Image 1 (cartoon, one colour):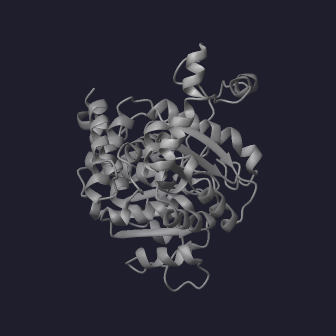
Image 2 (spheres, one colour):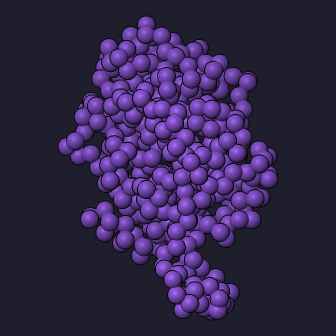
Image 3 (cartoon, one colour):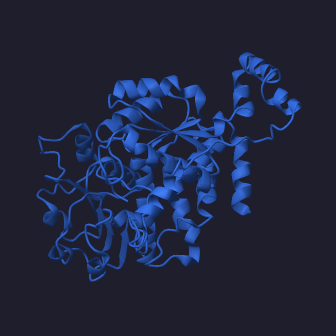
Length: 414
C-alpha cells in the first residue's frame, strides 16, 4: 500500500469500525517480546545457558566463527532498520514515532515466516552514519530489512550496504512492493490470456516503489514502459532529473513519449498507481480495451475501484477491503526466510523474479480477475516463496548452505 514515498506497506486500510481504544490497547507495552528456547528452572539449566557452560561455546566460536551460525540466533535474525523518514502514509515522523511500525514489521516476520526480527530505529538521516552503524552491527544479525527510508537516499543506502555486507539486504519499500506488483501483473496477464512482455505499462510515481517496479518489470521482459513523476513523463530530454530518474529515463520510455498523464495513458494496457495523485475518469476511457488498473495509493486509491471497473477487466488496490490487495507481506517473509535458509550472501534480481513467479503460480486454478494474488493470510505463501528464493539462490551461486533448502521444501510440501 503506497506511502508518501510511493511504496506499498504492510498495514491494511483502517476498518471503519476500528476504535481508538482497540488500537492503543493492541500496542500497549509494544508488540514484541523475547522468549527463551529452553527452560531455565534449575541450577544446572542456568549453568548450561550461562556461566560456566556458555564459556565453552564462546571459546569454540572464537576458534571458528562459523559456529556462530549454529550456536547463536544470528543466522535466523533480521534487523528491521529505519530512520523514520518515510513512514506508511505519515511521511517524515522521525525514528521514535516509527518504532510501532517497525515492531509490527518484526511481528509479521515471526508470524508469517517464523523468523526472529529486531526493530532498530536510528536517530540520523545521514547516509554515511546509517551505513556505518549497520555495518558495525553486522555480527548481531543475519539479514537487513531496510524500512521507511525516503527516496532518493534509500537507493544509496541500500546499494552501499549490499556492497559492504556479506548477508541479505533489501529495502522492502522498493523490492517487496515491486515483487508483489509484478506477481499481480503476471496474474492479470494470465487471466486476460495476454503475453506479459507485450503489455504497454504506465507507472505513476517515481519514488522508491516506482523505481523498483520499473526495474523488475524491465527484468521480466516488459519493454513498453512509461514512468511519470509529478512533472510528467520521465524522458531522456528532461534536464530536471536526479540520478535515479536519469537511470529510469535510460531504462524506460523506449517510444520517446513526452507530456503528462493523458499522453502516457492513451492506448496503455496497464496503469500502476504508486503516488498520491488521482486519475480523471475521462483518461481511463483512452486506455486500450479492457485494461488492467492497479490503483495502490492508500487509503484513497488514485482511481476508486467502482470507477475503475467501468473500464478495466482487472482492478487491484492496496486496501484489504477490496479484492486483489497488493500487500508486501506476501513477499518479504518468504524472501528472507528462503535467503537465510541457504545462507545467501545477497538477494539477487533472479531471486526477486522467482518470488513473484511463486506467488502467481501458487494460485493455479484459483486464478481469477478478482483473485490475481493470494491472500496475505494464505499459509502456503511464505513457504512457497521461501522455497523458490532458496532454489534460485543455490542456482545463482550465492548460497553458502545449499543443503538448507531441503527444510524449506519439506515445509512447502507439508
